[in-house]
Each structure stands twice: as C-alpha cells, then as structure tokens.
Image 1 (cartoon, rainbow, N blue to C red):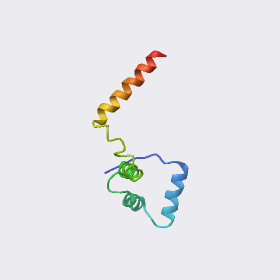
Image 2: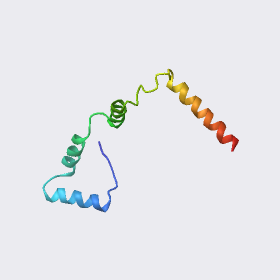
Image 3: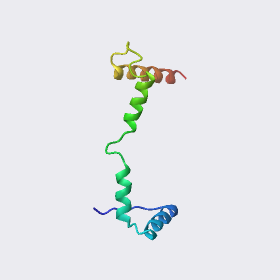
Image 4: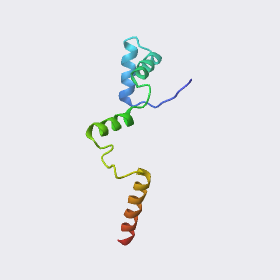
Length: 83
C-alpha cells in the first residue's frame, strides 16, 4: 500500500531523527501502529466510566431512550420557535 501524507516541520525533524538512529520510515510506522489498540476504545472507555459513575441505568423510568431523546429534542425546538 502506498500512502502520501503531509508532515509538519516538527514531524519531519522527528522522522529525520529516527533515520539518524537507523530507523527507517516503514519501521517507524509499524512501531506507531503497534501502539494503537486493535479496536477503537474511546467509546468503550466512556461507557465504562458512565457505568462506574452510575450514569447508565440511572433513569429506569426511561424505557425507550431513542424516543425519549426525540421528545426532548422536539420540546427544545418548540421553545426555540417561541423566541
């Protein structure tokens, strides 16, 4: 696969520094990719935090969250129309 990217001057310096230490760009990219999680984790981290804080499940009276969100959005739009 061929990939073309624009690098900032700072990034260029870092690549040059890696070269000076004998690390080629391919190896550098492989090292960076190896540090990434296999799957996106931001959403999972947010959900885990919400579960720890008791946010998830804190409103048992809301049975259908999509319907509830739609209702709140409609109410907000009606208020905006009144202004």
